Image 1: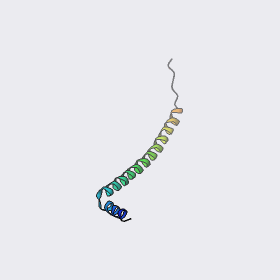
Image 2: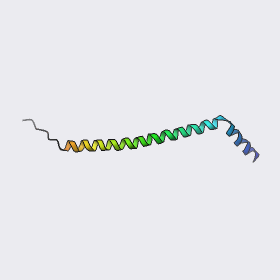
Image 3: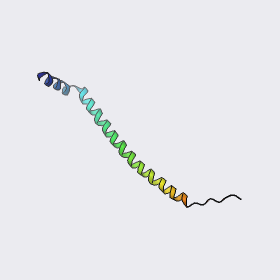
Image 4: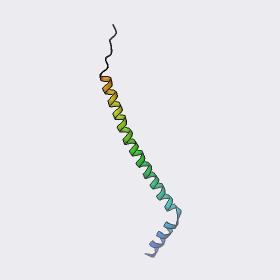
Length: 65
């Protein structure tokens, strides 16, 4: 048990452990922002192409004679 406590104390004192946690939190935050951006952008693109499709349906193209 003493070895475990000594290892835990050393891990807390070393900066490698803190750096790893910081990178993990930064990666999680970036992933969250990118995911939300993709959802919002995807909805806007879907709405845009829906409007374009509706507009194109009403267009008549004259045939050349």
